[in-house]
Amino acid sequence: MPDGSNTPSRRSVVVSEFTNSVLDPGQPMLGPVENGGTIIANTAPGCWGPMITPRLRGGHEVTRPVFVEGAEVGDAVAIRIRDITVTSIATASGHDSSPEGFCLGDPYVAARCPVCDTVWPETHVEGIGQDAVKCDTCGNAVKPFAIVHGYTVTFDETRAVGLTLPQGAADIIAREADHYAALPDQSRQHSILTFAPSDMPGTLVRVRPFMGQLGTCPSMAMPDSHNAGDFGAFLVGAPHAYAITAEQLAEHKTDGHMDIDAVRAGAILVAPVKVRGAGIYMGDMHAGQGDGEIAGHTMDVAGSVTLQVEVVKDYPIDGPVLFPLVEDLPPMARPFSEAEKAKGQRLAAKWGVTEIEPLAPISVIGTAANLNAAIDNGLARAAQLLGMTVAEVRNRATVNGAIEIGRAPGVIQVTFLAPLSRLDAVGLGDYAREQYGL
Image (cartoon, rainbow, N blue to C red; front, side, top):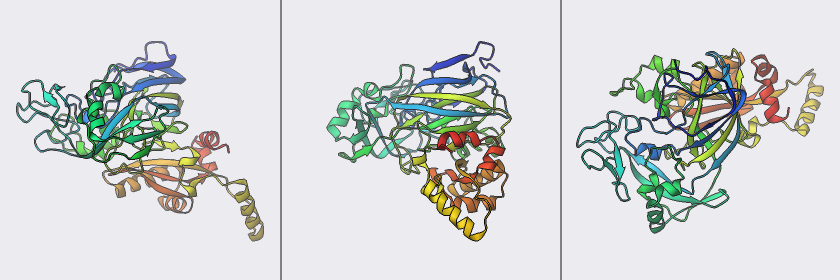
């Protein structure tokens, strides 16, 4: 398998290339980057742009994976997110529908022109609006997705806030869509700004950027947006070339598509390695999002990302583990203050408790076809990781944590204070100490 491992590793790798929206371990990786090295990337917007670009075979346009020196199957990779910066001047988004006839089973993966019956047709843009993407072969408007209710938003120069725009302003931006989207030079998507939606003008929003996609390459080819238990379920028995079985999905996915708003600058993500070299990739940067991404989409933007990567040897986890920033932890899962610990010690002395176990936050990601199944998956993963029963994880997540929704229909976080001794036993204690000053 081509993997870039025959060339000398580099301390830093700069990434400006993208996949065709399919993560394929059989394709050459970039790099290699040395263990402990840095990956710097200029990312393209996810979701809506790729969704209206039928040649792309997944819901996003992610960076080509990077080979990490020393990463073998059964290891994990710790990814320290050093920086995330929004470069887009504006973006557009909204709640979607999928018009009938414009896909082969899945509009994210297999768009088609219903007039000439071409799957993955080449297209071009004529004018602005929701009929602007045209088939190169027959000239028909090809729209595997339509915006039911949407908005165009522009950001201030400091990228601290955004403001949704009225129709006239959205139309001006649409005519220079690639400029305002700051599409990277090698991006092949049509900018969603071309659609010029404007259904809720004058709304002020906060900018709080994070990565919707960040992780490692799955061990079989699959569309990037479907590298998760919920979207991946759409591939099971699908009528297109990327159909897989449920067993293949469970074995090969790495859950790199999380849409968890805590995956932002300052967080530490520990991801499974299912192919030699890990294949670190990223994309789908969001300017901000509330838990659940309940509209189905949010403010997808271009941006720059800096990561530092470190191999964790002999660590066969099935899905990601996250150490969020303190302010991103649920209130019940935050480390105890010195004042709280002192009160706890007085209780211990009163009731003859000889030792209060040191605790540290951890967030285990669960994914599945729906939220209930995703919770079960996250609980099971946390129990297996820390050598607990699922019942104990349920109790700890109830009294010292929370279940948080990354994305509907099926991505969650099981976040709780775990015994630091358990984290040490599985090689994660030092990440918790680093992140929370323990």
